[in-house]
Image 1 (spheres, one colour):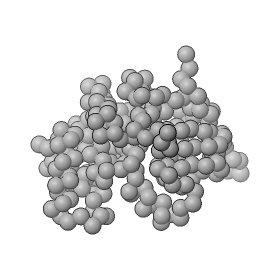
Image 2 (image 1 turned 180 degrees about the vertical axis):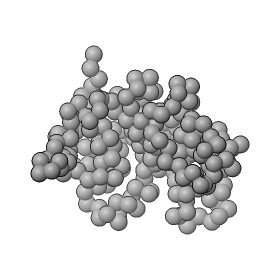
Image 3 (image 1 turned 180 degrees about the horizontal axis):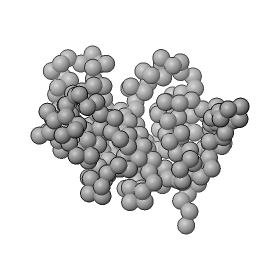
Image 4 (image 1 turned 30 degrees about the horizontal axis):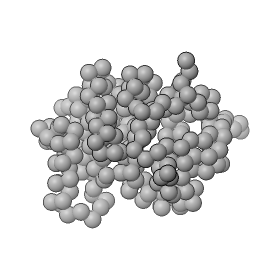
Length: 228
């Protein structure tokens, strides 16, 4: 069998609150196969976003083992970790994180400015990404001229523009109405189904979680299946 794209063993993470260490993740283990669409659910403060940030190389664990795409993230320096994130991780956030002074096209192009692609190649990639999310006609619009659902689709195009190994989404529908949320989830489902993208999504919304193939439930730092 192929090695899982994510391998987590006995992962621990705590944060400092004054002089006290507050545990967030406790001896957590998880395997995620390549091409999986995983939803992480659980109450606020259960460690969902912390786990997502560790997988994405935004934060570091206190102990245990975390391998993503065959790389032990604990062995990377800060510079190596930044380069690894840029090459392997696409981020989708609840509040889009688009730059308001840039058009949709320019927001999607941003990650490519760090590559060696020519201007023509960058523009070809961006045009293809905007077609994929159904926003070709909105390329010259600024975020303030777009609906919430359209802004999130721009954010997904930006996350996918470098063809990342892993797409991580933190409450991607949390700020959207039901219709816009359904459009965004259908797009993510297509990226997983048709393009084979591995997706890890944190969500409080059971309707969003239904799009995933696998749902795991975090509570008090421990991982299990959703409660009955």
